[in-house]
Length: 446
Image (cartoon, rainbow, N blue to C red; front, side, top):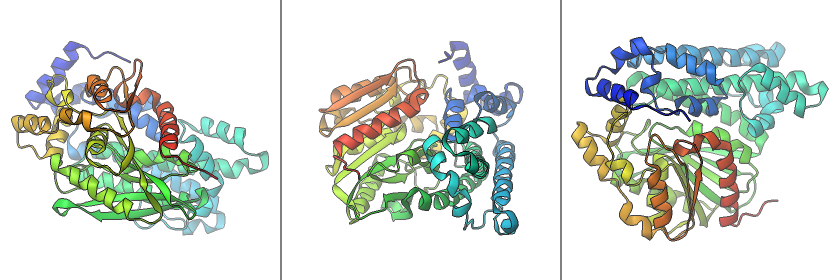
């Protein structure tokens, strides 16, 4: 993990204070003003080549809404067109019936085209290039089926890369063109998951839950096909994370015997109300909805949160006795809200201010400090798994340690020489978490 020098932190902070980040980015590119994990995070999501993506970031020369989004939308659109072309090759003489994925209209009828590669993609995820995709097919498919499976896998892979690049365009949300990119990414994800689900033996429902303050949680309920009732895992992400980022790597656990509800954190992207301590009520109302579903086991509800979602997971673990167990990854809980802002880029400060509805830097500091849950650690009695890297550059790693040591029945899993949310060990901790949930929810599978 590369160290961020004091000089770099001072430079980024000076640009934030003087509001000259966009001007500086014309000379340096965007990279110095993005979180250290930016490349790894989106490379994991879309199977992007790290060097290629890092180069694209260096060539991004503005954070201004139109320029930032125009740059990344162009790359995303190229991948969407590639996916469309591959789907039309698969369709053959019926190619005119295949919708253009760059068009935000409906994209029905694609299940049969991608079905040959659906399980292979779900199990192994996207890859950095065509050679890696071909090698994957050669390893797992009989020779006679390889040409069609390769085309289908390439189509899904390009589709996911379009979703990913539109999400990069949307980072970190709130501004008009970024929000347009967010909805484009989500529309493409909706089309993909609807096409994949029947082949993977899943029911995926788009669920809107009206919540306190007049807002709406727009989440996804994923339920195994069968009678149930199933244990359910409420999963939520952080400051600028999206449902599609959460969901894609979860497809490989489709036979876990557990249902999932995926939602974004209050205050981000699709919400109209800012995040505050009162947003706790949003999660309570979501749990109300899950507990009332006859297909789900109200006595076996778990919660998993990543980054700021880990904060909400820890908070709910202390305040909602309907949770049977919980996993908090990279959670800010106290120290992260009281530390200095040295080295925090202007774009992140802007996103934080928008998320919590802060009017100025002093208001932002006050609103963040009000989120502290240090006094609630001892009230967490359910089994709690706390995950992070031991060298978190975004939040305080000490928060993870303090949370685990303060809770009654917690396990701390710190990955050595890793950063925020242990992204360098993403696959490993996802696998570990599945086994942990399976054990604590007493899951039985056929």
